[in-house]
Image 1 (spheres, rainbow, N blue to C red):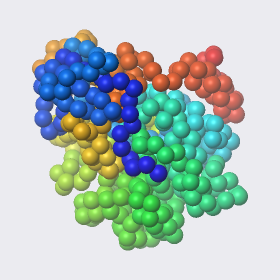
Image 2: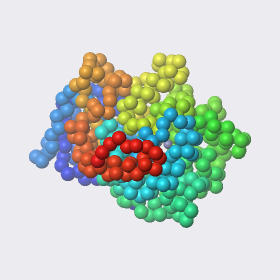
Image 3: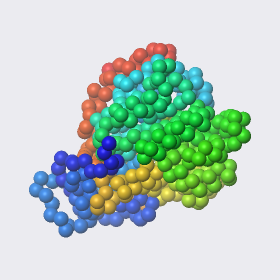
Image 4: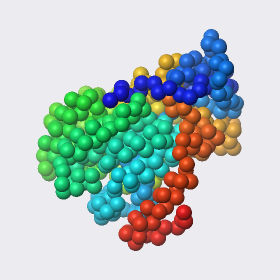
Length: 453
Ligand SMILES: [Zn+2]
């Protein structure tokens, strides 16, 4: 398996010219931009002319644009785009048990995962997300879809103490994980990981064994933790501990563990998060839509906990617009803490880029724009009515910008979005196949599809 983040050669050197550039989101502010040279997938120099422009360079003019690091979506179940809008306005457990799990049992297959992930990867690329952390089933298919679209990803194989669409009744999750790791494509843009669904669907043996595998393989272990009050009550009844206290008692929390949600936290839980240095992924829109609650993000940031941002699934959000997610994160933090200073624009953009990269172990590869790092870059068109006047570009990005303002996207020096169009796959072909499959999924759930291929 190749090392995550090692450079993948791009076709041609790229020169970005003009506009503004934001190299360190949340740390420093944008500055006027002259020229950035990209070659071999990496940033060679920024605002400097020491290196000559290669004759075969592709020049991209960025006048009236902001050049910034690609956004990092630290939690998604990408293939679930095919279940988007199938069942809404329902509490989490009812939504899962009565709608999602039955639909998954009938329709999740390698083909479905490949197609649904491709659709989500296109949506994410168009929204300025250059790296995502995915978690679902048949995850070698997610890896292929990620490579087809040209994004960077950490791809986690789902684990439950129940039969899943990719284990059925015939094999154990351990067999599935070992097959996943064997089949995982070797490519510098993607790395494998594991995902224990949650403390209410995975017991102590499962968490311990998954942790051991993740340690041996040197990969991340993700889990939903403390998402709803129901979960807290259930875990207290089972173990007499909160979900984080219980996981800590298993000795598995640390830098390699990535917890998703953390909506309901006691003071003791907050200290566990701080002491174990784990990454916590905040998914504000999914938490709001499922009425799960609002996480104590402001408290956690003040304690120094590493918090990243995630969309969660396109079936519980229901879109993957990361600009909307940033705005929601900041506004929810202010509302829930009754504090206008909570999660300000700079903290939010840091969380959505540099901190997300750090939590995924990619801090030396992406997350800021510096020579030597990979050229994962988003070019945002600032010449929009809702972005005018421009007193503070960071404020505009977090509070005003939309996914549709993303003009161009580069991943490892490869242009994957140009002039708001995906360049690497045919969206029309993906759309046609999605509509075909969605017709069957809808019919099985008594839902009419209002689209034609
Ligand atoms: Zn999730």
